[in-house]
Image 1 (cartoon, rainbow, N blue to C red):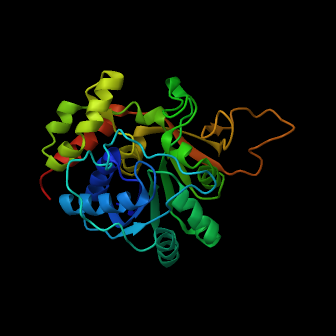
Image 2: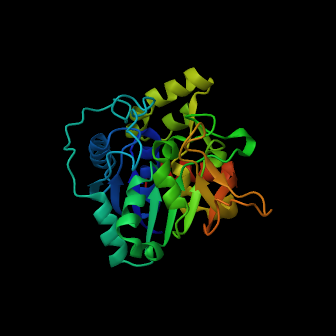
Length: 308
């Protein structure tokens, strides 16, 4: 069990990951960021979901826009409110600052805190920009984001870019090229871990079942699949079952402009080159293979456990 700061732009699959995290890890706090929804809505969603699911963790309000780009529209496949428009949400959108909370927490508990980031990486980049002294003090940063082309999984917003990275590629490039100890869960593995709509309905989790309906409908319409990939949940699965993943190691960067904006790239060749964008960039770990059945079964078992 790790001590986590859980950084999220909370939409439907983020909520599944948060439910899993609450049952398997120690939640120090939930930090919100723009992405699937505006940051104020993310604060409201985190409060609503924690109340409905009896998750006891303080909630913080993070960055409202990317570091350098103009803001883009929120995602719509999660419903208008990000949680499937399933519940009235009268919660406040105000909360203490997320970036300062990350900085203060890591300084107070050096080498003890794992950051899990399943939205755009703006809060994480802002924290290390404002307080570079925390970089060696973070135990690990686990990211759901990116796509490296394994088995054709190369992007879900553009042919090159995954949503979380595309939303703020400058933040992602800063984080991935920093000295933080990073593990990346990209689309290469998240697209392999699928659960059916029937399996969701059998979980006996009425809140998850309520919020997931538009998400499943979107999947059925666009891909002909009554179900969902457990994208964000894989960041927590790594903490529960690292042996289920096959990792590659090497320097990672993000393309920040042009037609490939938001593409995550890794160094594939050891050949000398005149201009090396990976020079002095530390190696990070990225999951490119997964035992999908093992990850899926542990998730379903954990959410089905009624002992709590």
